[in-house]
Each structure stands twice: as structure tokens, then as C-alpha cells.
Length: 203
Image (tube, rainbow, N blue to C red; front, top):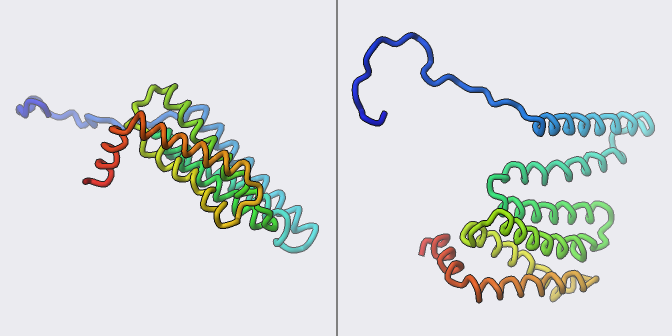
């Protein structure tokens, strides 16, 4: 492949590049076991619910919702594990969406927007900063997702102006943290931010 020279000899019939099967690690086995027990728990709850009420419409659907709420963010995080910062942003966003649907399905009380949204945004920014420090990431490697997370953190400000938020303290703290993060980004990493915007928008 490198020198483009002619090969000598005769082929022996063996595959030059044999297929190497990946070995299933303990972590993969643990995930499969956990998935099995999750499905088994849902089926058992469905059976108990049906035996008690004679219908499949009942409390076991909340068990299904809880199971999906657990495995869906986990699946997204595992799928995007090659890009840690991207995984953090998408998992946080999905977690907020799931919390909002749970709030709606249990008689909307506003806890998903009052508490979960701002706390999740602040936690995502904090975790991203810690991961970037631990992995010694360059600012160019995570600045795009940091900007998305900062913008995501300003969403509570819009909800505050619209009168949707009732318990304002977490949202105010989240907006303040997002504004401080954006200010620090503009002051200390303005050149990197400009370069990333140009690269992303192909200007």
C-alpha cells in the first residue's frame, strides 16, 4: 500500500485482515443486566396492575415513564461519550424536557421550570468547567457547547418576563451565572470565541 510495488508469492487462501471480534467488557454486561431487570420490572408491574384492575391503563404506565426517563438520558450520554462537553449539554437539555413532561403528566405545578431547569443549567456549566479542567481541554474544544449552555441558561430570564416562573430565586441565580460566564468568555476568550463563530458559520 505504501510503495505501490508488486507482491510476490502465491496467496495461501487466508484472509490477510481477519475480523477481530470486540470483547464485551464488564461495563457492557452490567448495562445488559440492568436493562433486563428494568424490562422485567415493567412487565411485572403490568401484570400486577392488570390482575388488580383488569385493564392495562393504570399506575404501571408511570413505571414505564420512569424507566424511559432513566434510560433515555443514559443512552444519549453513552452515545455521545466521545465528546464529553456535547454529552453534558444534550443530556442536560433532555433531562429538562423529561422533567417538563413529568410535571405536565402529574398535574402541572411548575417545579420543572421553577427548579429543574435553572438547577440543571447551572450544574451543566459547573460540570463542563470541571471536566474541561480535568481533561485539560483547549477552549476551542468546548467553547461551542459552552455557548449553547450559556444561552440555554438565559431561557429562565424569558420565562421570568413572561410570568411563567413563580419561584424566582433559582432562575435569577441561573441567569446571573450565565451572564457572568458569558462576560468572562467575552473578556478572556474573545479571540477564540470569534474564531469559533467564523468557523461554525463559514464566514
